Length: 263
Length: 359
Image (spheres, each protein chain N blue to C red):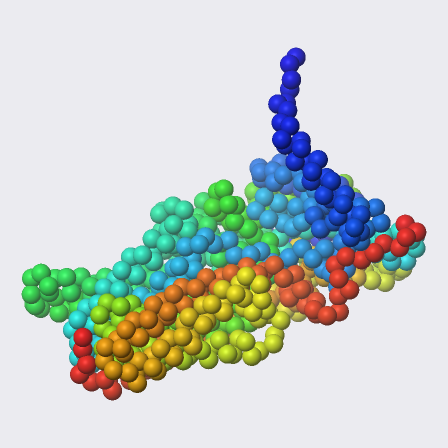
């Protein structure tokens, strides 16, 4: 089994939302309201329990030459967001039931028959991806189309993408493809094109990389995402100190009291 | 053939009224606060390095029900009560104090799983927690701590029951010793692990306080346990007075520490709804019981007891409100899009920017 990944190229995305539709169709994800968020043509604003692919409409003030725009036009970009399938996944580490597992393809998968809806993964994801379905009580997110990958198919969103903005393949191959693509874009004058793949933090790289333009924060991508387990050492140290203080304090209080004063 | 939709004149009127209000707001202020409505020429939201993605929060807020902060409170008090019961037993303190502490611990060990099941929605879902033990997951460690604590605390309380009913005997002593030892061993982490639980998360206000949270929660739980015991009639015990005073002084110090530091990740503890709850909880667990207990120590016997009862009520309420406050602060912290995106508070030109008039 090869380790797979997504490479989502925002410079090719046309904002058609075919990936969102294909994902819902294949995975039987419930609709979440055809509401306009008021932020460009964005419907849901973020990925969630019933939005596993989410097309962002990145609209900024006029920026001469950005995206080939005329000077007085607003800049407008699209990018299809998805679970990042982290190398060190906060949700997977936090899951107390073992419902969240690493698949043989390197993806992070929530087993719906094991998940008990404790919602600890929700606050453990540094990208705010996994969410609890409030009707059902369990947590849901992108499965990386584990069922399709099992039988050698590519994920539904990548299959449906009409511009190959969503690429799917072997991770190392995609990483080198991404570097080449960024070089090509820079040669064409897109000096701000870059690859979002946080290998420098405790997340240790992701299986859903993004080619974006400019600052990742514009796309709601954190510059330095951290897996919450890095706080565990400090936390349990605090817990040990607290236990020591409680034990010592109680001992001291009762020893000096000598049991003389009862009720 | 007949009418397809029932016409509701009241609803139509309400819509017209709403449109009128929006129009007036647009005319007078040049912008409308409701999402998705922007009059021509008005400022428009944008995605940029200063504004993030339209200021939509990156992180998801906690999706726990109201039972969870109550569980934090019950668990903290029960764990501390078990520790008090065990130490009182080992140091030969008043028998009635030992018994009452054990009953508080046992009651907590029954209420806690009930609260968790209520949050999960179905009892069988709680069993899924027992499939695995994952040291890297504070929730898994916590569930196993709760199970150990539950067994220990109920064994100790059951031994009390057996002794009351059938008198002393070898089996009762064995059960009592095993239960006491287990409830002490598991009670120590059980009273504070919920601090680690929320600290090891992606929520900034929690993970930036991860080392202090368990200590803070342990003090809060101790204050509540002492309060419960004093309200059960032990308001003459000097040991309890010392413990209650210690916990209240620590909580006062914790409050001062939060207020004195200026980090932006601490904002949810100081501003807005969560800030108010934090301050109410802090004052009830810190300064008020500290002052009441100091005055009680200097007063005559009768007055001292009533002051200590007041301090107890204040500490118990403060402990519960403090846990609610921290969960609320987590909600507020998750809503702040700036912290995870590392956008400084001051550099932003505001989320709304004017389009040039030419467009």
